[in-house]
Amino acid sequence: MDSRLDNAPCGYFSITDAGIIREVNQTLLNMLQHDNPELAGLHVESVLSVTNKLLFHTYFYPHIQLYGQVNEMYMSLRTNSGGDVPVLLNGIRRTRDGESRIDIVVVEMRKRIEHEKDVLQTKVKLQELYQATNEANKRLELLNEEYERKQQELMLINSRLEAMATTDPLTGLRNRRYFQDHLTTLLAKHQDSGQPLSMLIIDIDHFKHINDTYGHPIGDIVLAKLAELLQSMSRETDIIARFGGEEFVAILPETGKEQAVDIAEALCRATAATPMDDYRITISLGVATAEVGETNGTLVKKADTALYASKSGGRNRVTHAGDL
Image (cartoon, rainbow, N blue to C red):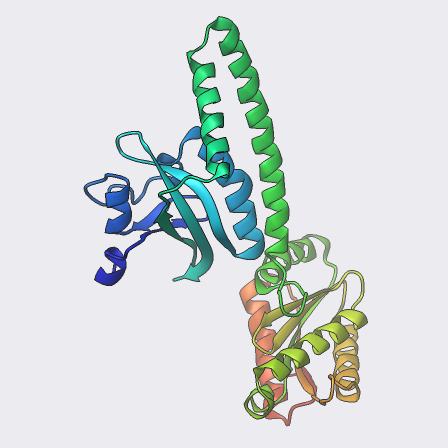
């Protein structure tokens, strides 16, 4: 870790989506009374009280999965000696080296706010329940059962948020992750049933020129407008997704070579004839139809090779991999 970040005037740590701490700076270690980076590798719950675990799971995780960041969250961290440190917490979700990470900055708060008082009161009540008589222990068991039920509900909410995480925010189409997962599923069905399966890779011609000439905001408008057109012309069973940059993909279940080429050519013509706001574009398409023993990688590669042939052949055209 960079020495400036390690000794920054605020605490810092990063966790995985599963809650495992990967990095922690010296400032946070000092704040939590730890002498060395022993927190790395532990679960984030190791620095949270029971009450704050509930707060973290019911607010922080769902919010950062949905919006990608959390700002000004007030809570308490647990020190090595068992004490509490009131903090202001900001977090943001990023992908580094192929792994999703949540970076969290922690600022110690000297004055407790009303929200923190409520959390502390809840903590006291939980401690009283743990220290009570047999009757109170029975009540605590009921509380734990309720907590487990809420955890199950939370897992359901998180799964819904995960579905939202498979949507491209700019175009509203499915993203590359969703495409790859469903291509695997549909290829398996194709191998079992023998029903045809085709896919398209769609690339905007000279898109770099649009960005360089008119700016990225105009490029974003063109991407969004093309996404609307592709979605409007798709069938209910088709899956249209943004593959990355100016490339889109379409999975066409129960679609053979000739029908897939017809669909691709219709998209090519419609794009050339449809204004994208105040701009006109054309697209090049590569088409591939699955064969016996096909995999995600081989099918995508064939479609990509066909797209390259369309680009090399003059653009604004359709090429099927089987014709190469």
